[in-house]
Amino acid sequence: MSSRAIPSPFTSKVVVVTGAAEGLGQEAVVAFIAAGAERIAIVDSSSISDTHARASQVAREAGRPGVEILSVQFEVGNAASVDAGVTAIHSRWGHADILINTPCRASSLGRQRQPLGASDIDNWWKSWEVNVKDAFVVANALLPLLLKGGEKTIVNIGSTSSSSLKSTSHGQDLSGLAMMRLSEGLMADRGNEGLLAYTLLPSQYGVGNTGESITPKLTSDALVHLTSRRQESFAGRHIKCEKGVHDVISDNDWLLAKEEAVCQEVAID
Image 1 (tube, one colour):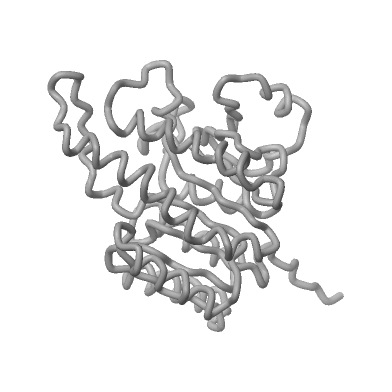
Image 2 (cartoon, rainbow, N blue to C red):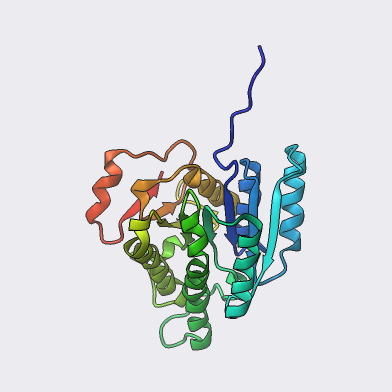
């Protein structure tokens, strides 16, 4: 008896991944192609040649050399550069379906958390520029293309530290909280036009509270799983990714019970 390949949920969809030069952004590109994505734009302000090479290799190994990979390098702080990048995506496909909004300059931020009174103010403010301004600029620029697409989905990438009761005055924590509010604001502004926006909050990479290794690959798998269909119940929400994610996303009533929570958090267990 002959078997038929199961169609990928990403067939014919246009996926845009920002911050794709390294880390989570690069892993997300690889994960989407492995999951069957046929059209993907990889975006960063840094060189994305390594990501393009990895993506092409994954496509070839999967027997899909025809995958369309568009490399878009632009400087988020330069309006003309951003417009040129968006124009390149529009010229290629005419629309976008899914935006994975990962910070383009995350590696430029210091990881050490300094207490109030000892903080480097310039670095503190840079966290806001990278985590909030950059994300807003990209979402704003790509919004017209997303509203032309079928999925109309934006996933903003934050951090679990932003929603923790142990959050500090560190720029990463406070700007991450603003990123969470960005998803809520996008839903308030454009949800009536079909836009779906939510925030994924990955744990700090290392060993999670269950002893499981938390890696960019785990988070990228979560992104693929979440966006394999429109998760209407996650609109404007903040999703913690701390453990395994396969086969756990559903529309159960317990998700809706979080409606009155201050941060509207949904934990992926």
